[in-house]
Image 1 (spheres, rainbow, N blue to C red):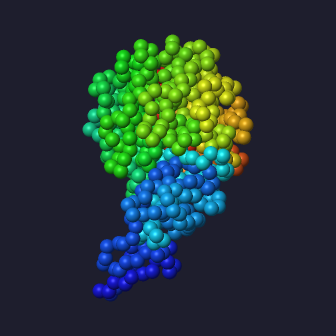
Image 2 (image 1 turned 45 degrees about the vertical axis):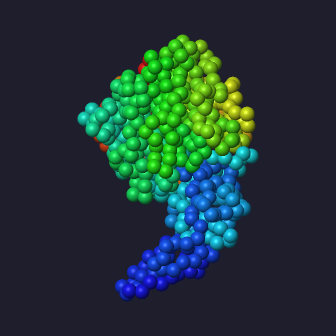
Image 3 (image 1 turned 180 degrees about the vertical axis):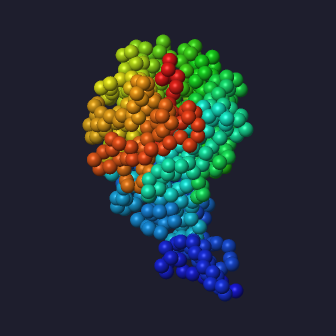
Amino acid sequence: MKSLSINPCAGFQNEALLVVFGIGVITHALMGCGGNGAAGQAPVGPQAPRLVAPLSTAAVTSRRPTLRWQLASGADGAHVQICRDRACSTEVAAFDVSGASGAPASDLPVGVLFWRAYGRSSGVTGQLATPTWEFTVGARSAPVDTSWGTTLDVNGDGYADVIVGAPFASTTFGIAHVYLGSSAGLALSPAVTLTAPGGQYSDFGSSVASAGDVNGDGYGDVIVGANGDAGGVYVYLGSATGLASTPAVTLINPDGVLGEVGGSVASAGDVNGDGYADVIVGAEMANALDGRAYVYLGSATGVASTPAVTLNGPVGAAGYFGESVASAGDVNGDGYDDVIVGAGVSDSFDGGAYLYLGSATGLAGTPAVTLSGPDAGGYFGVSVACAGDVNGDGYADVIVGANFVSNHDGRAYVYLGSASGLTSSPATTLIPPLGGDFGQDVASAGDVNGDGYADVIVGASVSSLAYVYLGGALGLAASPALTLTDPVVNTDGTVNDFGLSSVSAGDVNGDGYADVLVGSSGSDRTYVYLGSASGLASAPGYIVSNPGTAGDGFGAFLANEVGGVDVRRGSLRGAHL
């Protein structure tokens, strides 16, 4: 058998190649231009850097985003490729740069793109590439160049996937179904069904979320809560073959007692800027109902099993701090992700929401901003989310729901980010045309019309409605652009909890527009509404029916997460108190 060495600059575009001709084997080991090496020898030249930002599956605020990496010993720069696909068969930009960061020279196309880097030293490009990461480019560049959020893509194909919890499935202590996106849209049958390992904790699937990329391999990971009794949380890893069906790590209640750990879970983004996604877990009944939230850090080996930071609710408030948790995105543009935690019962049900800032040393243990309920007894903080960037200034904004205002009509409040951090007064107050627990669920909708501004969705499940509000240069519109109604109307007048859970789905069909999910647990369905240049469709493009048993809560808890979107969907406490 004969082995031949191939020049990677001669038309192979740095792609791995293995061709078997029966009598000879041609090998190519990802050699960059200027690299050298012979077949059968160890690779030579600078080692690959380690990618740091934007996190894989994040959204960037600039059409020319700054990419960051950590150089290997002996390297002085990098060769960067940005491509349309994970295999990098369609390259859209490439550049050589000294140091540990760089940006493309021209605007990148809108949509999901992939990137990887090779080490360089004294003009020589190494042979080995980093893992391939992905990010989403919006329609416009903001004044601030940063990134945040995560789109669930468990198999790394560039299409958004979704996860639907069904925590009341009695025979399995709860389940969660993962559905894959594709060029044909969202699959109607689950690719993976997750069950509570050994039935260890009940209500598995009571919270579900994209975890981001916790181990830096470039694939989206998943976090699932099981808040029965003491509660527990499970992290599942994505890969080229999809999501693993067994958890990589189980996060047990740090207090070891009743706390409903896992009633809310979320990606925290990257709170310490190390290039690995972190997660946050709420425990609303911990510490005598004051509540807690725990932040766990990602690493090359995955999520740590012990929290790096414990956030405590106000002492003696019995406020259920941690009943809602979310990444806030990057509210001050410093390059570190921040988090927000809700406590709807605090201050005699006026409620509160607490913003914590990330930094090079990790997440602060004390809030930088405390948001108070503007309306007495409103249950402010029952839901919290990053709204994305609703006014296009490059800073992440947040939205907080208060579903008890005006005798359960409800309200939602949008707070803007800035160079000095999050404002303490709402820029926009959303008042529904028809209430009914409006604000019990709030989320970013992504950018449903492709105009470069983030939009939001707010559910009103008692009225079986979900409202979509559009962002713009002046901020979020105070009136809904679209009201989604339950496709199933019961003749006996009962409702199906349509809108109890409503989130961005990401872009499930790859057309460049964000889509949304709305759950309807009473009818055992989840509806997918598709975005377009004219906005969100008023009729569902896909209907996902419960593959399990009626009444198991299918559709009450949904997740993707785009642009920093909140992750816990469907606080049954807020809906039924």
